[in-house]
Length: 99
Image (cartoon, rainbow, N blue to C red; front, side, top):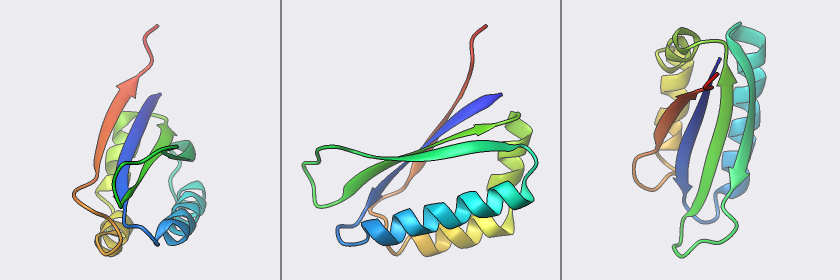
């Protein structure tokens, strides 16, 4: 299993929209990607900028499942739309459990 943290700076006033999109993406992943395990969204408690920081934490069966998702048309469409409500470039970090 791998864990992925996706980090976003959402423009002020677009928090509810971002959170709604996240819920839709999770629903889509559960229905369409066998390698997807689960996801949660976290909002930074304090922020010193006009953007609101979010982290999306997800778990995947393996790195190939995650790569399949980020190579999908649906991912490209979501990130293309997201560019209208996100400041800067989002980024992600991939981790695996140490056993």
